[in-house]
Image (cartoon, rainbow over all chains, first blue to last red):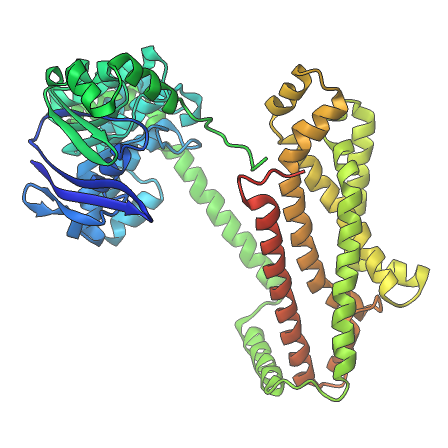
Length: 271
Length: 283
C-alpha cells in the first residue's frame, strides 16, 4: 500500500502540487490525468524522490519514504521503477546494458559497486534481462545501441529495466506522449501486462481520457496542483469533467494533445 | 522471473554475445594488458627513470619552493606589470586575429560546405602542416624575421592558432545539423543564405567558446614565448630564474594565475551573455 499524506510542492512562487492525499493498494493500475502544468509529473517524481516534497509524507507499507537517505533511498528507488516521457535510456549503450542498469542496486557493498562499474553482471542476470526483453519481443535487439530503436521499442526497454529492478511499483510519467498511436498501444499493453501478471502497482500520467478509461481501474484528475477527482473512470462523467476543467472531453483531449506534443529530442545549441 | 540454470544455458546458446566477452577474447585482453605494462616498464628503463632520481628531484624542487616563500615583487616590479600587460595584449591580438580569419578558412575546410575535394584537401593539409610546427618554433622563426619583441609573439600565436582553430571550426561546421539549412534553402534562400542562417547560428557558440579558451591558454603560453625573446612576461621570468630570484619568480607566477583566473571569469560571463540564454538569439 502506497500512501500520500497531504503532499505539497512549491517551486518558488508556484504551487505545483498542493495537499494531495491518496491511498493506492498494491496491484492497482491508476491513471493520473490533467493538463500540462497540473502537477502530475511533480506528483510522480515526488514519489520516486526525484523531487523533494515541500510538505507532507509518503508511506509505503508503513515505511516513511520521505525520511529515507543514502542506501535506504536507493533501495526505495529500486522498489519503485520510473518510466519517463523521453524514455531516459542511455542512448550510446546497448539495449542489454540499459536493462542491466536495473540491477545496479542489487549487489551491495564496495565489491558489488566495483563489479557493476566494470559491467560485470552474472550470467543469471544477463539471462534475466534477455527474458525481460523477450517478453516485449526485443531480445533480438539486445545488442544494438539504444538509439537505433524506435520510440515505442525504447519505452518497452525502459519497462524491462523497471522489471529488472524487481520493483513493486512502476511510476510512468507520460509514457506514451512522445509516441504514435500504434506504439502507444504496445507500451500501454506492456504496462498492463506487468500490472496483471506481476502484480506491480502502476501509476501512470496520461493526457488522454480514453487511454485512462481503457487501461486503468482508477482515475485521478488533477487541476492546478489539486486532486479534483479520485474514483473509477466511469465516475468521470461529462458533467464532472466540465466542472473540473470547464471544457468538454473532446476539448480537453484536444488541448492536452497540443500541450503534450513530443518535444524535439535533440535540441540545437541556443540559436 | 529469476531464471533457472537451464534457462540461462538456453539463452547462452541463443545469444552468446550477450554474456560478455568469450574466453579467447578475455585471454587476449590479458595478454595485451601485460604487453602494454611491459612496454611501459621498458620505456621507464630506457629513460633511466628510477625512484632515486625522482626523489632527488623532489628535494631540488623543495629547495626552490623554500626560496619562493615569501613571494616578492622585487625592485623592478613595474617591469613585471608591464610584461604581464604585454603578454595579455599579445595573446588577445594573436587569438583575435586568428579566430577571425579561421572562420572563412574553417568553412573552406568543411566537407559539407566545400564539395570540391581537391580544394578542401589542400586547405586541410595546409592546416595540418602549420599545426605540425609548434608555437615556440614559430616564435623563434619570427624573432629572426621581425626582430625581438611582442610582434614576433603575436605572429607566432596567430600562425599556430589559426591552423588549430580553422581545423576545430571546420569540424564544428561538419557536425552542424543539416535540417536547419535545409529549411532555409526550402524557403528560397541561396547557398550563402543557408550558411549564414542555417549553419552559422549553430556553430558560432562553439567558435566563440573555443576562441575564448585559446585566449586564456595563450596568456599562459605567452610566458614561454618571452623566454625566446618574443616579448611579454616570459623574459622577466627567464631573467629572474637565471639569477635565482625565486621569490620574484613566485610573485610573477601568482600574478599569472590571477590574470588567467580573471580572464576565465570574464570569458565565462561573456559566454553566458552571448550564448548561454535560450531566449537571446545570436547573430
